[in-house]
Image 1 (spheres, rainbow, N blue to C red):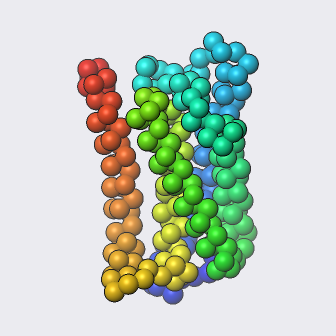
Image 2 (image 1 turned 135 degrees about the vertical axis):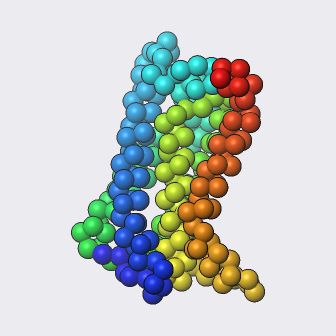
Length: 206
């Protein structure tokens, strides 16, 4: 199992990690699979309408058909299928008693940094460029952000990552103490920008 952190405040984090990895990974896999399937249908039939095309704003088809939907030359959901499968495997490994070394957790943190940067780029592109939202994509955003956040927490707790500078230890203590508050605030800020940008539509339909 995951090595127990030396901080008495963090056994709950240690126990929560496999739940975050497996449940989050399964949710991410399901969403990525649905998007991949709909993308394939859209390629085969340009007139295909995904079931999540609910209105001009909530429109998976618009996101899938955009150039941002293939940011690396292939459909973005392929990344999700690979990444979330790895996440589920890591979570299952922890359940089975696997102990991962320091370099593994640091590498996982680097991977989740890429993931969280990518979903914020997708957020910006969806809201301000494509002018449409994909519900399944937004679920993936939440899962990716949450996974990154708690991989970061574990690296901080185990001192695999040490914040430099005079106030590094204070910042670490603050982040660890208010980890859930900060995560919720992060997601609220994203929701705020989404609602603010599309309020002209949502506000008129309340």
